[in-house]
Image 1 (cartoon, rainbow, N blue to C red):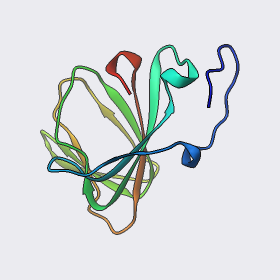
Image 2 (cartoon, rainbow, N blue to C red):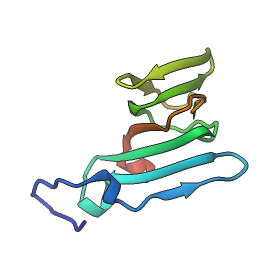
Image 3 (spheres, rainbow, N blue to C red):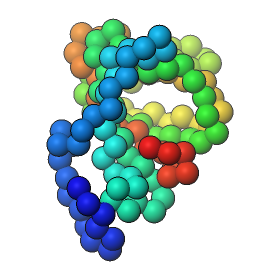
Image 4 (cartoon, helix red, strand yellow):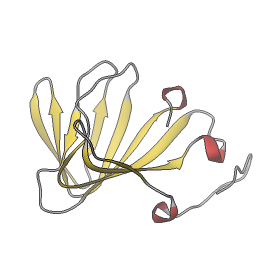
Length: 122
């Protein structure tokens, strides 16, 4: 997709090439940047994460907040207050500087949208 300054863009998530992550800190995760720098987004970046059963994001924190919407599957959200369950249709607000992790302890693929500020990267 090319930049479409001042134009509405409609795309298909599965046509965006995923970046794959699988190492000591992250397992079975794909990230697709749906809206970001490439489309000329001025303020936010929207990513689609896919996590296989048994997979997880890194346990980490950062200065920026992010907003998450669970599209399908069930996420175990690791928080300082213990593990929380977020099912499909749930939203999760993660404030800046709070340690967190998303795990897929279920049997079906977990998919979630994550929105971050543009300054945080993609």
